[in-house]
Length: 202
Figure 1 (cartoon, rainbow, N blue to C red):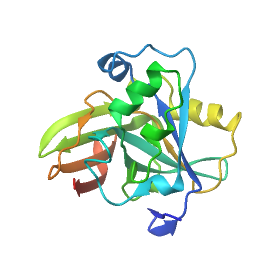
Figure 2 (figure 1 turned 90 degrees about the vertical axis):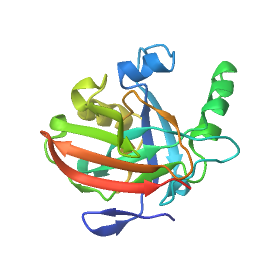
Figure 3 (figure 1 turned 45 degrees about the vertical axis):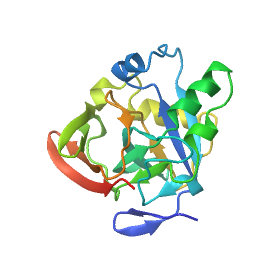
Figure 4 (figure 1 turned 60 degrees about the vertical axis):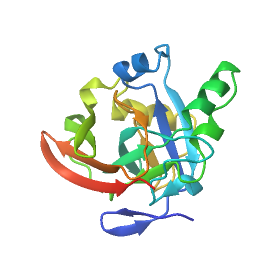
């Protein structure tokens, strides 16, 4: 089972639960309809990786996300995450009305920074730079569904185990991963950076 680091200690999530279409500008950039209810999908523990791949049968796309660790009924830690997507495959599956798992839940499709104790969920913001150029930036105020709403909806029909990860959706600016690109992600609280992580795409 794959592990992440939470509050300086190894943790083994049983699963990753992801919110889709949670930023209006991202919905527009992909030409999707705004959902009338929360879009949720899951990634297995096997999706977690420390390596950022640029290709897996087709070019991969990046999506930067504010992520939370669930523990004892609430979100207790926050981190930066990358949700990797096989966009061409996802588009074909959507056209046929089929599930997205082949395009979203493959091995290596989820990368995470270390997680630290959460402070002020509603004051969180995220930024992704690629090769020192800003690509994605957003904050909780731009979310269609805020963290507490997300937690309530997920737990209304699914059991979250301690250590599970929840990814809350991506702001606009998604795109293709190129081998050799340097990805630098950060999370801030009230504008003060609290998390910084980087990867080189392979």
